[in-house]
Amino acid sequence: MALIRKRRLTEQQQRRIQKQQQTRQEELDTSNDLEGLVVQHYGRQLEVQALSIPDSPPIQPPSKDGEAAAFWKNIELDSVWRCHTRTNLELLVTGDRVKWQADPNTGLGIITAIHPRRSLLTRPDRYHKVKPVAANISLIVIVIAPLPEPAPGLIDRYMVACADADIPALLLLNKTDLLKENDPILDLLAEYQNLGYETMQCHSLGDLSPLSQRLDGETVAFVGQSGVGKSSIINSILPDAAQKTNIISENSALGQHTTTSTRLMGFGENGALIDSPGIREFGLWHLNLDKIDAGFPDISNLLGHCQFRNCTHKHEKQCALKQALDSGEILPRRLESYLRLVDEITELQQKN
Image (cartoon, rainbow, N blue to C red; front, top):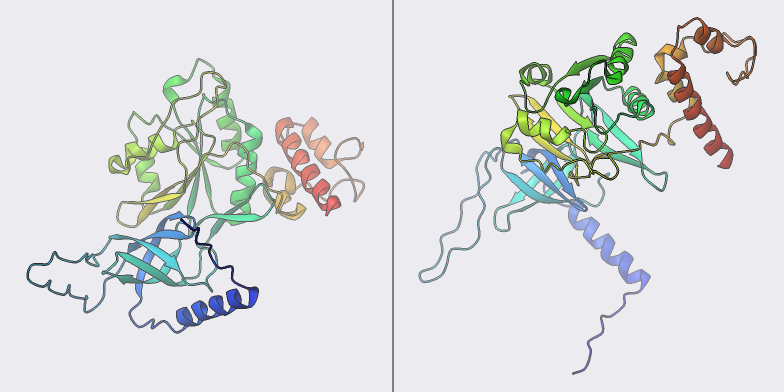
């Protein structure tokens, strides 16, 4: 049997087709737009939760005698629809408020517009390009646990990211049932509390009512190393969430990734919880030195008080940071974390 080869389009033909598609979408009638919330994304498609319904909902056409009823999906509040986006829209993420239209005949929809974002959490990908993670977040919960062992440097990176996005952070110690007597993680938690960060403790199988009360009315993003129990906490607060969980790897003592895409779940009357894929490293290569400084409030107020304007804070004698370190005003590990980030950003700037 002869092989049928797919005809290869010329660049001019491809541009013409793309222009036709864009024109069709730009001419789309927006009078029937609905309000929606992006609750999950799958590559080029997104899941949108209906926040409004048409004033005059479309009516399913009757089927002819002897024929099976054609597919039809009613447009109902809180129903979730798989949607495409108009080609001229920016990249959408979980948490975005959008305008969209539904097609009951196919059960699919199209996103026509995006509302202005109140906040946007981003991180660079492996190619050093900035990648949005979630939008319109009002609180970021950084989850740590006795196992896997917390990495203070990673927590500091999260705090810098929160400061850059202007989103409050809550440092949450989970799995308190695994705590040992005089566990050093409690000292770590106290250090951040003394720095002015909000902290809490919980156990995902225990009483989570204090945490639920704190999260009420917030749009919350959970971040942290894999295996710290983010999904277990969400399952305990929202039993219907059915987030996948996994055990700690015995060989590496690191968490195994179970959440594969960022997902938003309604919580209470006006709140929402967002579970994001576990992150073992959180790059900040897209930030400049001023934003790194702002992410260390315990250090930034000392900058500019050294003897030399170009002080490296490593070997100079009249260094305000070293003097503050000697007097106990700043923690050695915080200064080490800060200088490491400064070196990373400086090295990258020199390469570029």
